[in-house]
Length: 515
DNA sequence: ATAGGGTTAG
Image (cartoon, rainbow, N blue to C red; front, side, top):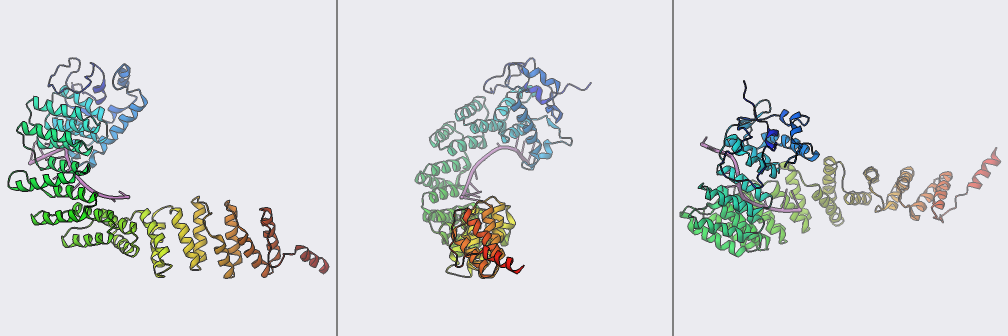
């Protein structure tokens, strides 16, 4: 009674030979493939033990018994399911029990899009060839997805072919379809080919919107032909009262091009021009400028841009702050960097752990001159420990050193233990400082355990460490312990010449006479 | 009415 339902896996059964490249003819001439709607994709359809899959073992494009194919299909289901996170459109296509109905070309486009997003380009193209079995006719949207698919595969010629087919079929490719192609070409630096498409469209008498032009601007900037980009931008600006015009994306593209070649001032000039003609700069505009100044070694001007943003009612985002912070660190403006760090933390932005490490190390170094900075280093370091499971080796080393400077040997030892826990070697640590420090505070046992920590973890204990400790033990009359250590040193080939030889014999003799 | 299209960091 219920009409047989085409399951997704059946789509891949080779009832007929697949056409190598998808054709765009609207033929319904697949006799063995009864076109039945709707298509239901259920989790069950993908069941890999399904006996229907046995039919697919012949020479075909998709072999369901092949391990990787199974994995791919599985991943595909995941991706289609996770479509719910895709642009608020889930409810339309995802029904309650995870069934996926295809009734309209729009549903089909969504499926193709899902495949595209999951980078299943070949599957996407294959699905496209099955389009007619759903008695569906591709529309502009379908074609732009297919064009994008070819582009992602780096098959620009094929993509262009699709565009021509669209035109031949009498369909009007709209600006969105073209944008996909132009963007893909420009992103790969194939600006010349992109321009050919522009020329082609012009000859066809089809007008393009501002977006494809923006792609071109970006493409030109990308290959370093910024001046040409500026020229085009100016042309676009002149035509404002026509249908084209410029928008903030256009300016962003060219400004970025200028910034990338060290012409940030000119970029700022363009910014002012954009303001003049009434465009509203967005966070990307400002971030572009920040990046420009940062690259040019003008990190303090990044802070200026940050202030400008606030004046323009533009809320700096994580990228704004990260870029500024990165610039300040790169050019060694450590105090300002800490200020920006504090601001980020205050807002609740996560700071990159590597930048935090750099900040800690520089603050430590700087604190030799400006004592107070060490507290800032502490603050950032504590945050790092809260955040990550491990802290990078160099940063802990520097902090251990800084703790030693301040006679905070407990903290130093705690961090040395962390280093061991994290599997770091202790070779870079100045253990004699730690041991001397503990001894100086009269804490011989802590000094001893520091030495043992180093020894137990394959570190080379140098003469100074042994000497300091043996002397200290001797001074405290702990002769037995001193001689033990003396022996350990000897075993390592370190012959100690302490202030006073430990005299175990004397010691025993003493005991002997007493009893 | 509407799917499909363009921007910034490390």
